Amino acid sequence: MRTVEAAPDMRLYTPLELAGRNIYVREGCYACHSQMIRTLRDEVDRYGPYSLAVRSKNDHPMLWGFQTHGPDLARVGDKYSDAWHVAHLTYPRDVVPESNMPAYRWLARTELRIDDLSEHLAAQRMVGVPYTDEMVKEARADAYAQANPDTDGVPGVMQRYGDETQVRAFDGVTSQLTEMDALVAYLQILGRLTDAAHKNTGGAETSPATAGLRENLEHEFGWCSRRAGVCSTSSQWRLPFVIQRSGHPTAVDLTKAKHSVLEREDDHER
Image (cartoon, rainbow, N blue to C red; front, side, top):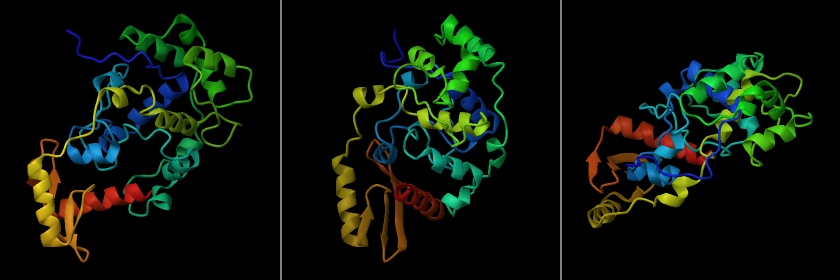
């Protein structure tokens, strides 16, 4: 029985993106950011089609996560510019004033270790990721070339990983390959390894019960933020609720709901 959807367009992480993923794991980013859009109505409304297992079939370990102190990053790729990510990682509150994320300034000053990337690809191959012998052999050169678009190694990167491979100085500097290059390269590919989710899933449906509840709340409490799932009148938070994909409203704590919705609205504005 097949439990993972087919995704003929699935491509592999490049050595640079894999190095960025390792840094993401090393710094514990998964502790605050999930990478799994659940089937809950509010998540589908916010992020798009729910995540499929195939998206993570080459992730070892998987990084679905279970905490959402920050936004889900399953499809953060290409949502922001490289410069935005660099600024955000350098000092988060310069970009998002209310952020509680720590700064990662040293990434831009730390040279990326690439001499062992072939070993990392070989290890991934041992657990089923289909890296070829050539990919393993050229891992170091490919990582350098992907962040240096004017080098002779770029055609090889494109040939091995596909024409849609992003090649540029991700941290804005070509004189040194840094950990910032790698992490930004990884963030920019999230959600772009395959389009399977957009082809094989649909948006959440609204049940008649949920639709009626919303109408009543809008009438009684003024307005209802359909996307956030929280009703208010004159900026005073009233009767917060979360709409699950099943269509059944569940009451939640007011303080948590307010914080969650403010975070969501800020994220949409950004």
